[in-house]
Image 1: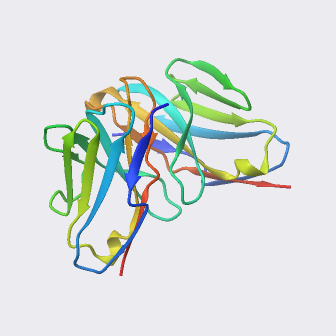
Image 2: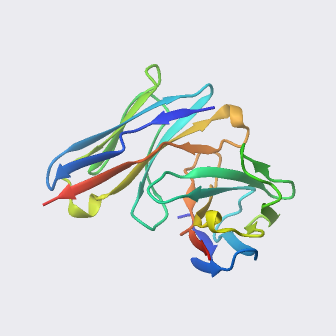
Length: 115
Length: 112
């Protein structure tokens, strides 16, 4: 079945630094990937839609300049949290689908802790 | 946009049956998904409904009524490992990329 790989699984960084999270579709090509954020005991909130070869589409309230998304190939999307602050500490999860009507497959998530 | 509601928490006993409800409001409905998520892990796909009726998959079944904006996930013969959060998600034609919007999630606790 479709596999989505996300790296790193955990990262701790200092306030003010930037962190890059990678999301790869391992056995299929994904023109579109989705980035979600999940705070403790809450559901997944869609942050942005990543489109191969074009600009990402951000949800209302998500800062484009803070959460940089690059979808440079059909198998890789990256999310960079710039100038991270403690309130950015969260579980970030990427997802993709390998066909128009197929379900979303999720990466294993990245737990970001900003100190 | 979408408005998706689920109960926050439910408890049930091992071996029992539990039904988790989900109501939604969306302008361009194109499918409803149920996912299971254990604490600290990514969601895993359980079921998908796009037409009215019941979809059965082993111990799990999901029902959809588009006219009522309602779905439920039915879990039979509950096991301890079924303790997890269950997420209802709706796909909408109007969003262009067919993105999935998730409900608040229901935390299910299965006790012995």
